[in-house]
Length: 90
Length: 90
Length: 90
Length: 90
Image (cartoon, rainbow over all chains, first blue to last red; front, side, top):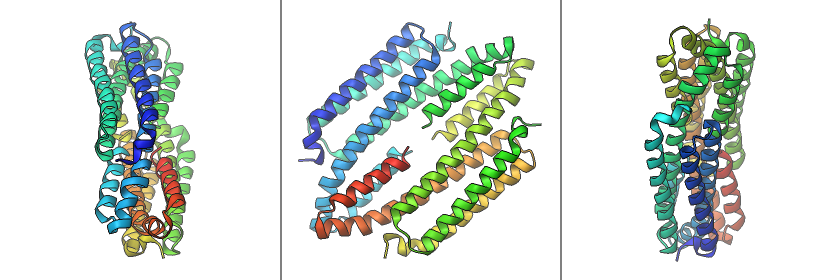
């Protein structure tokens, strides 16, 4: 059981909304909409994906990482957590 | 006619792939997949959306902005371009 | 003469302030200050450096890039501009 | 005693290098150096500041946060950690 279990429904709904936004951008391009409006939409998609990632990161830290720290110091869990943070903050 | 006209098909295909990736993350969450793998996928989505934005930004600069500069100095077009850059680099 | 000529003094002052902030973080570390406060300061430094970059980018676009577009279409100047944007938005 | 105690000297040296880079950019502007070269330097400064932040974040997690989790569950320490991550990934 992962840390995000409790917020699963919320996460899936937010991802469905992001999916809809991505489809919306496709439509904007098909309809030759103005470049800057499309850029604004893409920035919104990135921000929304980032927020989903932060929610999962928090749930992961409160769940998996905290458990690993309590049971065995969590050395490896923290190394992996940092790699994930480094990766998604690029 | 916008600057991205020539790469329209390519952009739509890339957005369809992003849409598929977003659906993939929903499935990962439904299947209780490991948090760090989900974070990696979300980072990939953000990177892909960023690349689409860069392509549109380039087309916009070569098209709309360059035309505005040639016809009337482009003061306003550059102001708007900078706002777009500032917004999506946040 | 580069685009940033007119805002040179302002840019140098902002960079001096950033230099002071970087020295401030050194002092915080020497004094064993709390990690989260240091992280906040580092985020402020990054944001300030980003704003300086945006100012230079804007001046560059209004100056060098606009001139290149007016005199010869600006193909290369725009390619270089995009590489700079891609690089500093990473 | 904070988590970064062991890497204190390394952190201070890296910050001195960043300080030098910031002074270098001031000099570049005074000498009217090419905009794109300055942007590249500013991107390098931001990347270096980000790496220092990641090092402190890791030390903080292995130190303060892990201790808080072991002694009392770490609820608050994790909330604060997430706020720090959210802030510096903006």
